[in-house]
Every structure is written in structure tokens, then in C-alpha cells.
Image (cartoon, protein in one colour):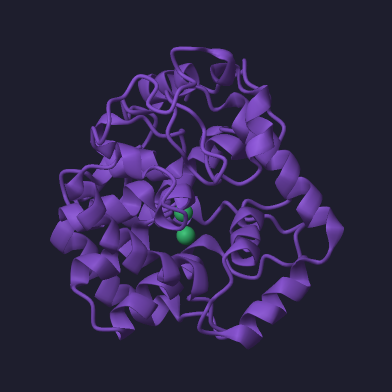
Length: 292
Ligand SMILES: [Fe+2]
Ligand SMILES: [Fe+2]
């Protein structure tokens, strides 16, 4: 397995979940004031805020157009590892950080909470499956990738960085911001060219999309590919690159987002009891072996 030795290895977050906890502060659950206040209280420890800020500094500094091209070449060969689905679940679940007392749920539990909330609302089975697999791309961390190249808000590269992206001031450190070909409103793109023609910053979203793109309905693929694109699905900062079709499909991304952010319940799901249901669901849509 190839590990990029030429990149800074600094992983400021104690746990990659700290990024998602920070999202809850930025976008508290509008339907649950008590819970939001509770979550908010938990952030008032300055140390997490500092590490999240440091994480975004690295992310914004190093996610250049060329970096994304390089990571696509490296990872979209899918020649790192072959696993059957449940092996991959176990592998992903090794991604825990016991040193963080606030990380109470493992990866499988986050996935099951998301998918079970979707199932409880009566959505189609492919939507449930999408919830169940949406963060599988985080295995990138286990291939030695730095946190800032796996998680964090995603955004287009190859054109101006929007000031609606969290911590926009850190883009001053990104060389693309000084490149006249890449720093204009449209950069290398044309008005409403459609997101399929736009390169996004590299991370777990694009990686999983590329892995499963032949197996799920288009709505599911939009949810997977753009679930961390907060600058668009929460802030509409990139309407000028979206096609009419993207805008329609983003209704599904918006439908998915609350399940990702707000589905945490006090009792962890019973993974063992739920397994037969998910075995059938996975078998219906996905190949036996997944290539990472
Ligand atoms: Fe995610
Ligand atoms: Fe998630």
C-alpha cells in the first residue's frame, strides 16, 4: 500500500469526529433546541476549537487543484485492498481514537444511526443503504492519509474559493489563490457547467462515490458525493457552477443532511440484531467484494 510520504502528516484532530461535532455547532438542529444547546455546551472547551481550526488551516492550505489530481491518480485505481463488505465494516471500525473521551460512538454506530433514522421515516431501501455506507470513504485514514485529506467540508478547486466556506481566511495559504487561471469566479469552468465537470477538494465523499457509482441510483450518488459540500447545500455559494439537473438532485442531498448530522440518539443501535436486514440490503445493490 502506497503512503504519501511527501505530505505533512500532522493530524491535529484528536478524533476525526471532531470535525462533525464542529459542524453541529455551525449548523445546530433546528428541530431540537435542547439537544443543540447541549451539543453547544460540549464545544465550549477551547482545545477542540483550536484543533478544528488547525485542521482547517491545513485543509485549506494543501487542497489545491494539483493535489486533487494527484490523489485521484493514486486512489481511483482501487488497487489498495480488496475486502468483502463486512470485512470493510470491521476495517473501518478500527478507526477509533480511545484517547478522546467524547467519541462515544464507533463508525458502525454512526452509520447505523444514520441509516436507521432514514428507515424509520419510510424512505426507499437505496436511501437507507446510502445512510449505511456514506462514510465508508473514511478508510482513507487507514491508508495513512492525513485527516485534512479525508474529512472536512469539501469545495470546488480550479476556481475562486467562496468566502462562505468555513475559515475562508486560510485560503490565503493556498497557492491556487495566487494563480490567475484558478482564482477567478469561474476559473477553469464555465457558467452552470454542472458539478460533474467540477473537481471537488479530495476526501471521503468523492472516493466512495467513485467506488460505488455503478451500483446505486443517481439520487444516492449525489448524496454520497456532495454530503460534505456545506458551502453549497447549506450556503448556496456555488449556484453559478450548478446545472439545472444538479439543483434538482441537491434536493436529495438536502434531504440526506439532517440524517447525517442530527440522527444521534442516546441508545446505540443494536448492530448484531440489525445485521440480517443490512446483509440483504447490501447484497441487493453492491458487489460481494469492494475494491479500495
Ligand atoms: Fe461524511
Ligand atoms: Fe456521516
